[in-house]
Image (cartoon, rainbow, N blue to C red; front, side, top):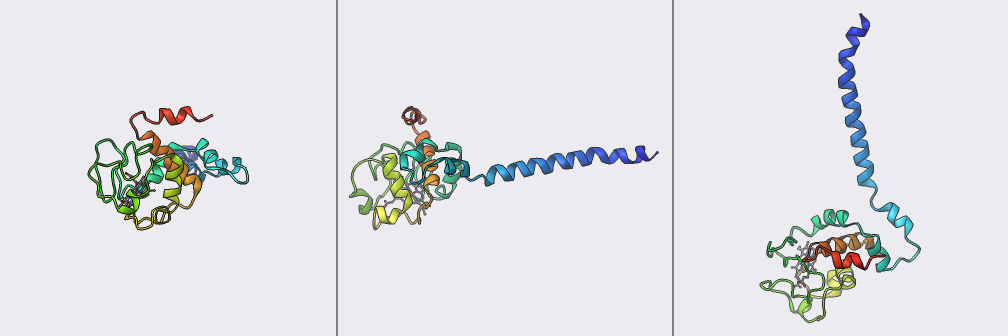
Length: 167
Ligand code: HEC
């Protein structure tokens, strides 16, 4: 008799347990904020070291802080900032034909290598004093590497060239 009364509660209880386990898993997965990768890097990792371990998926999520001002899809155009599709390897202040770049950025010359993107994203106002990119920067080098790796994939070759140079 007691058995019969209790059973109806078993399924919902199991369901609840499954939901709780799934939530615990998600929280653990999300809070593992690149810590394993950080541990595997030596004492003074170079930009190349960070790039070798870069996580494109995480870079895509981190790009949300750029997305208020930048699109990254082909043909998506400019917002407050220029469109960033295929920006890696492009002339600095040259990725969008229609965007009104500042003299501060235009006067720099050269192309957006991953290394220069890293320095730019660390502190835009230091890299190009007077720039209109009013963004304080991304202080964490692993976050920057992830974002740069993500930008490499948002390109004509989908990042194939960049992946080739990884060990
Ligand atoms: C508040 C708006 C804003 C945010 C947020 C922002 N940017 Fe920008 N970005 C700009 C503007 C404006 C420019 C043009 C700067 C200039 O002309 O001096 C720019 C320029 C750039 C350029 C140069 C493009 C070219 O054609 O030379 C890159 C690369 C870039 N941003 C990447 C990023 C990334 C990556 C993030 C996020 C980590 C980000 N930006 C966040 C507004 C923003």
